[in-house]
Length: 114
Image (cartoon, rainbow, N blue to C red; front, side):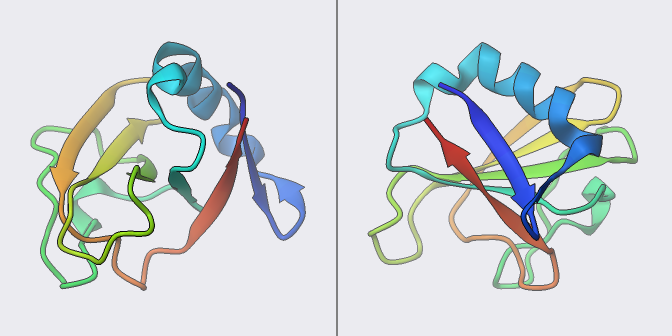
């Protein structure tokens, strides 16, 4: 399974290696019909909030990285589990199970899976 990030028709070069490494490690666990979004820019994990404006606590995560949002049941109504993955620019990965999508203030780009 390969994930490709595109923003405005152009690949997101800054995050390509981080995303590639993540999907090589666990991509086989993500269903083909899942909704997968990647933050369009680097983000501070302390600023990541859900659509209900609740902070997502990534603990001692580094200050910069990318948010990967995975919804394995995209046809279900909200209030169901989804996964927030913080991919630090240094290569560390932090995961949290949350029940709402990211806040609209976080610019997210769909990834093509498959």
